Image (cartoon, rainbow, N blue to C red; front, side):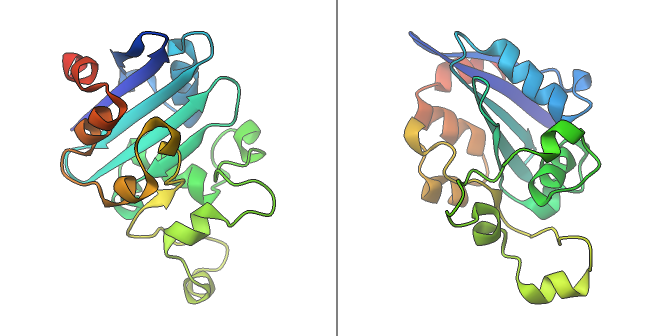
Amino acid sequence: MYFAALLARTEDGWEASDMELDDVESLSDLIDLARAAAVDDDTVVALIEQEDAWFGVVRVDGEEDPRYFVSNASAASRSSYGSMLTDELLGSDEEDDELDELDLDGTEDGEEDTIAAFAGADDEDEEDSPGAEPVPAGPLGDPRLLDDLGVSNKQLMTLDGDALSEIAESLGATEVLEAVR
């Protein structure tokens, strides 16, 4: 069972809305929903979880490139919505061509590659499956995507269980998230 919600930052705090995953067929659809929920092109955080198996965070700031984080890439890759995120983070060519050009790992040129640093992939894994990057069993993506909102990368990397509630608490959005749960 999935739960998904959008948290949109406003002048008065956060607004939450339930995200209908039935309407999401691709990562582009998810990003479009997040941008549509934005107030004055401010930050929107999409939260998705599948029971206690994995959770994902997509951050959209106006027209900037979206940023992603998945708590357990291996578990997420075995679910329809999680695979959209892991495919994007691992560079799968199956999704929209326009997204292939984006720098979605959250780094700038010359910075450490966030995906490689936190994916747990090493050269031996790449040799074992030529042409395809292995799906790591742990976190994948940009663990710093919520740092400026009160959720440190360390905290995000260690969340489990009721992770979305803990994220909402750190953001100061517990009440609005629980209202859509």
